[in-house]
Length: 166
Length: 166
Image 1 (cartoon, rainbow over the protein chains, first blue to last red):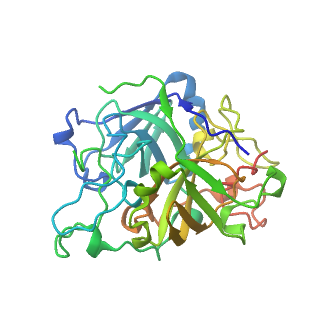
Image 2 (image 1 turned 30 degrees about the horizontal axis):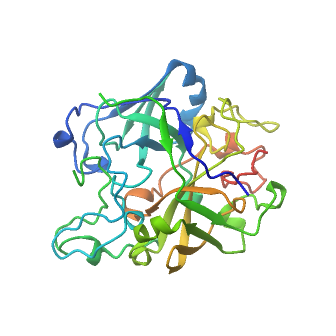
Image 3 (image 1 turned 135 degrees about the vertical axis):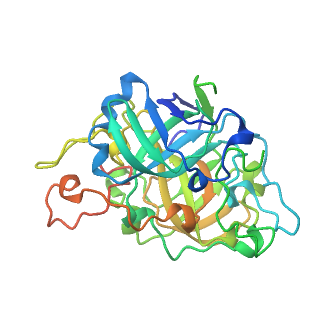
């Protein structure tokens, strides 16, 4: 049996974006036309060795403004009610954000990436290589009719932005 | 600027598997022929409302036996040296494990899933729906020649198991 007591994390760096207010953030990382930078604290820079051998990375970061007491996702008119674990809302008991990003460049303690949409200064918790053999499930399905507020809205991407429900 | 001080997580439940020793765990979740159960603490059960509307979930859990000081992945003969953030090793500063699982059944505070390979009792940190529109990147590439110790080993799946490098 493993221990299930409280767990302490130490951020390894910060995300550098051009967004200083939630209202400025794009709705999803894919909608962000600008690159972002994953800037690791110097002590962790060595952990990036040969990151450039992978084209994509998974970034775990921290939604520091989340409501950690929420158990249901806010719903829009006509939308099926969902629990926070049946959604991608930032508001959840352990608000760890997850984005898949494309790696554009690696220099020292900095990775330039595309596909992020969070606030400048957001704490980075972890970076992993993206393995299409285990992480890409093309047959996966969401019930979009329930998830989106209207079937013609074009919003078939789940909101992953820090501002999606703020 | 967001705060980058220490962050505290509270596990939301435990993974139930048939594996009580690291040596018994399969090398990857995909290699596990048995189903697993995500058993949430009663207080969090409501957060699973309508989880069954998605076919796949992302599970974040905790590698409590990880070496949190490691910055390089252990290498096998002939393998390129990599930083921990350029790998899926469980040994990393914030050892948050990530697996994509198939949801088989939802009953109360329990989700029966396939695709997990961790120890019985492993702490669950978060559950999210898997969205193929943002999470499935079929064009992603790893440099497998460098990642695997031999190109003919068949090991093109990145080790994600808790025991992969123990």
